[in-house]
Image: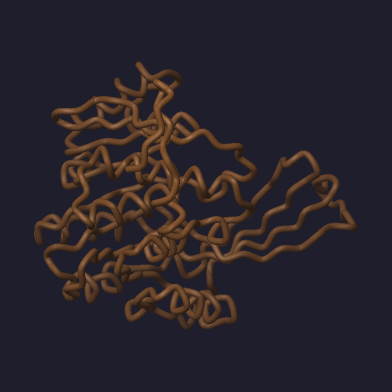
Length: 316
């Protein structure tokens, strides 16, 4: 794979099945009168779609079931012009699904059956790693087995590829794994899980980011929601602000941030500029409902100015 802006995303693909009703059912209770929505999701898929919409040449490595959800997911990836050569079909396990109940106040309860996502093995990833060019950027998350994530990171390190790890859902990670990363992008909760530092202010965000670098990561970004993202490198430690918007649904905002960050880095944008670009994309996504349905296109991100704390607006 030698395309310009080549990005390899390795991760999960789910179908989200949502029932919105007045109240959440108690144990043993049936609640009638809900509205049903079915949306494509999964952190890996969300990030792959983001990167494709924003101009990346995306190859996605995932595992889906031999069922209607898996087939629909692959068709959707193809519509987004994602290379699906390395999306593997599992003949035994069903595709990943999330069953989500949401009440009138926005409270929810979620049950996830990872299905085939839990069976994505190093051997499924190896063909894509063998074919990838040495200028590609690699993006991973933690909704697939940690063994597979660790294998991919080690192989990318051997090949000299830059790896971005979005450590979500939160879990502890081996130190040797961190030392092989170009960039890690936890949110406040994930940063606390990795470093033991509770992130509640910019000062504690800086402390956690510095700790991640001390643990071996070359560069750290802690995403801070509406505030933006805290960037920490060998030479820079600062907040990159997000444009002010009115949020209606934050679903997949973190995935949008990571997918767009990968695009900017694959284009060799400087890291500060890449983070600002990702903040803009994520800010657009929270003004829309849904996961992949909320992800913007490149023309929308390029057209959005960023308002800095001093009140000046400028486009990156």
